[in-house]
Each structure stands twice: as structure tokens, then as C-alpha cells.
Image 1 (spheres, rainbow, N blue to C red):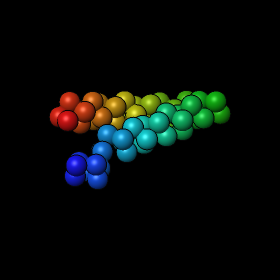
Image 2 (image 1 turned 60 degrees about the vertical axis):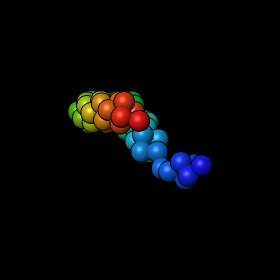
Image 3 (image 1 turned 135 degrees about the vertical axis):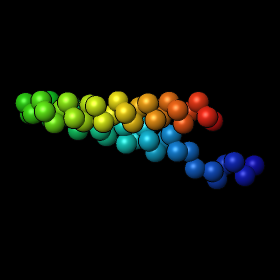
Length: 57
């Protein structure tokens, strides 16, 4: 019953992951490949963290 009010950390992380991918896509469209690569690498690291958190739950 009280688990209803518990925050879900992976939900927040997934939202941040989606935002990173969108920013990377927009950078790629503008031709800024360096920023695209950095954002993609950052999103991959975040995805690994999301997988770890979901395994623990």
C-alpha cells in the first residue's frame, strides 16, 4: 500500500535518457557531429545505469 508513494528512480532516468537522445538527434541534424557523439556516449552511459537500477528492483 505504501509502495504507491515510492518514487521510481528509473522513470526519471529514462526521461533524462530520452531528452539526451533528442538533443543528440537535433545536433546531428544541424551537422554538429562532435556534440552528437558526446551526447550519444553520455546517453549510453546513462542507459547502463538504468539497466543496473532495474536489475536491483
